[in-house]
Length: 193
Image 1 (cartoon, one colour):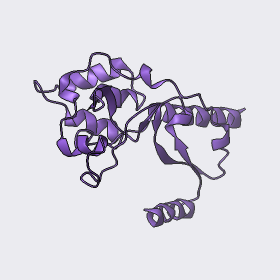
Image 2 (cartoon, helix red, strand yellow; image 1 turned 45 degrees about the vertical axis):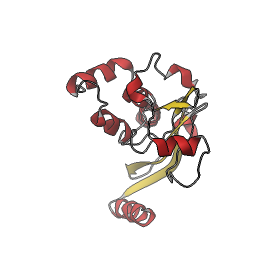
Image 3 (cartoon, helix red, strand yellow; image 1 turned 90 degrees about the horizontal axis):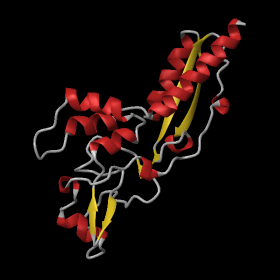
Image 4 (tube, one colour; image 1 turned 60 degrees about the vertical axis):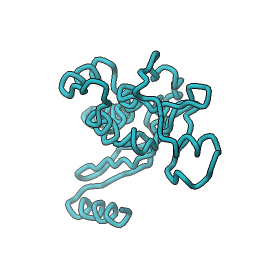
């Protein structure tokens, strides 16, 4: 969608906006998820924003985001994926199936069907998917916010919640967004002085 992006920037420029953009990775803002997304800050008139001034943070350990005692509901049982992982056959699963070590990959909307974010090795040739809570944590949401989401979208007994996975996959990493907003507020405050 590169062409559409530059058309968008040109339209904003025609309206008098100056735009600055950068590809940012959630890992540079403390979240152990390799999620690279383009961010744009547009200002009417001169744009004093600088992506170089954003406060980067060391990536936190993945263990801080993972749940303990995860239900068997999240254990991967698809034979074709297990054979692929255990090198029993190749080419049976053409997805991007990776085992998570220090960080997850991009959280997607369909974690159970297409686990682009990766899976967790639970030992003895067994693997599990990330839970909805883990995905939301890896998007920067705290547990109190997740509890509220679970109240609004209660899960059926013995089922995962496709709605919560979808919300996680379609979200913006909170820590990245808050850093950008904080920087915008700082630039705005300096302009008023």
